[in-house]
Image 1 (tube, rainbow, N blue to C red):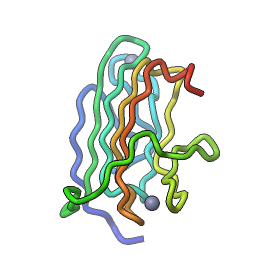
Image 2 (image 1 turned 180 degrees about the vertical axis):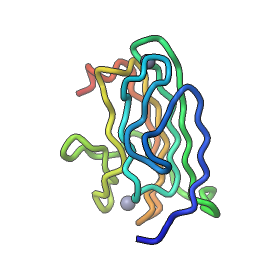
Image 3 (image 1 turned 120 degrees about the vertical axis):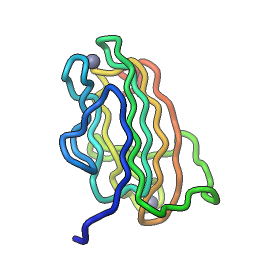
Length: 127
Ligand SMILES: [Zn+2]
Ligand SMILES: [Zn+2]
């Protein structure tokens, strides 16, 4: 697999690896989500952890053009506990529902370029 050029911004959160893997709340050091490494073009997450801390994360492929993509609100599908693209079933991320009281996402699938957005409040109940 070719190396990816990813720009990263984050606050009050820490990723286990450069472009993906487990996302931690830096206040309590618990995992709030898992980001699949190879399937996003852009992903932006804001969360509130059950410890009360708010954090965010943005990963964007250098040169990705997002402006003309169509938003799909709450259209991701769930497969094997992963939120996946509804077009090609590419796994994008999973959410540690019991560790978050709010979770907002925007994610663009690298394969088909579809953009998804959504928000979960008290995600535990949503599952
Ligand atoms: Zn926390
Ligand atoms: Zn896709």
